[in-house]
Each structure stands twice: as structure tokens, then as C-alpha cells.
Length: 357
Image 1: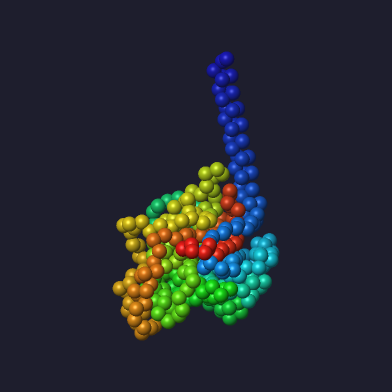
Image 2: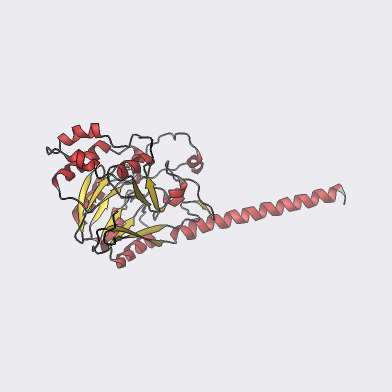
């Protein structure tokens, strides 16, 4: 073998390797952008959570539509979910991705009109998506804030409340009664854009605990599942917390899973159901509910004493988090890999007689 022959073979091998990697990259990108991001699926979960003797309650969680007017396949898939006959809708935010999408959103959700629902906002209910460097998600450095076009969130909220009868849960607590089961919901505004007002949320919760009948179950909702936000909800009584935002990682490594979560949530909890423990010494971030600050806010809403003590006695040490992988993507990153877009059906089942949650 002459040096020239050896060099020629090495160059040929390098060229073939480059060609193969280019083909593989093109095929992967085509799959992720043309096929998988439109391969909508339904994921089912069951939990024993209700008082013994209760009827099962089917909760349909819808998250992260990032809806564009021309996305007909997504709209048809969501409409088809009405065949599940859910008892409650949980809308986890990020409904819009375009300033002229409200009519398509209304048409898509029309089959669920009349079904009770709760809603929290995500950032893309207030602001339209903007281009971001995908590599910035891998960095731990704070991202430079950029201003995005505002969306007509007021019209969307009026539609949800007045036409569908759904309850807005940003920084609020509300009761929803389904099949005779009283659910006490505590919601936070999106911590991803610092719209969470935990003192106000707790004030509403204390008002309910002082004036309304004792709930059968306490549930929480927040768009972005930051550790402090989920801790706050679980710490103050929420046995199960619903969230979205992560897109399930969106671009995952087959056989390994998510690399990023777009918040401080560990990748192992990026989607689906996971247990949540309040370990000793857990850092109380800015989203942790403050009793001292909430007391002043409560005085503006209620006069009855004893709510704080009653709520303290209901706090669990553990709970569950359910993160939906969501149904959409940003229009500037229209691909999913090893992470199909999803809606979620969570069925709450009755506990066995004598079993305690």
C-alpha cells in the first residue's frame, strides 16, 4: 500500500461517512418536522384518589396547542377527543401561536362546550412566539429578555368563561363539583414569565377553606412546572398538580429520553405522572406561598378566622405531578423527535373502603 493509496482510501471513507451523516440528519429532520410532530396520540393514566363509592372521573388535559390557523390535523384530533366523554377539561395554557387564531381555537374546542373546565395561562397566551436560538435551551445562563407581540388574551378568556363556562385559575382558588365530588383547585400564573402571585392565590384558598364545604380532593394547576411552583401547590394541600410547558422535552434521545425541560424540573419528570415529595430543607423559592404575606391579602377577601390553621392541617408531605407533553411546538421550532404530541386522559378512581389518600 502506497501512502497515496492509503490517503485516497481515508478520504473516500471520510467522504462516505460525511455523506451518511448528512443523509441521516436530513432523514431525522424530515421525520421530526413532517411526520412525528403531527403524530398526535392520547396517553391514559389512572389514579385512586376519590372517596370510596364515588364514580370515576375522567379528566382530559389539553396543553400547549400553540395553535396556528392552518393546523387542521391538530384541530381534527382535538375535536375527536370529545368521543372520550370527559367529565372535566384541564387546559394547561399556551393555546395560541398567532394573533388571528381565536376562531380556529373556538371551533376546535366547540365539542367540549358545556363540560366543566379549568384554565391556567402560559406565556404564549399573552405573547406570540419569537425566534430563539435552539442552543440557548442547553445553556444555564439567563436568557436575554426580548419583547414579543402581544396576543388578545382578553378575548380568549371571555370565550373560555362566557361561552364554555370554564374557570380561570391564575393565582386563584375555586371549587368545581363533578359527579358529586367537590374538587378544590389552586392555580398559579405562569412562573416562566413571573406572573405567579402566590400570596393572592393563597388568600383565595383561605377564603374557600373558611366559607365553603370541605372538599373531597385538592388539586393544583400551573403552566410551567418550576420546582418552587409545584412545591407551593403540594405544600398547601394539592394532592395532584397538572402542568404543561415542557413539550415532553420535544427533542429526545431515543432510548434515553429528554435532555431539557425548559425550566428547573428534572428531565426524569418531563412528562407523565411522577411522585412529588417535599423533602426536609427544600429551598423555598420566590414561588413558595408565604403565610405572613397572604394574611394581609386574605383580610381584603374574608373576615372569618381559622382558615390558616385548617389549611395547615391538610398539607400533604407528598403528592403527584402530571405533566402533559402537549400537542404543539413553536412555529420557529416545528419538530419533535422521540416525543409524540399528546393529549392526556387522567381517570380518578374511588379508593377502596377504609383506604386513606
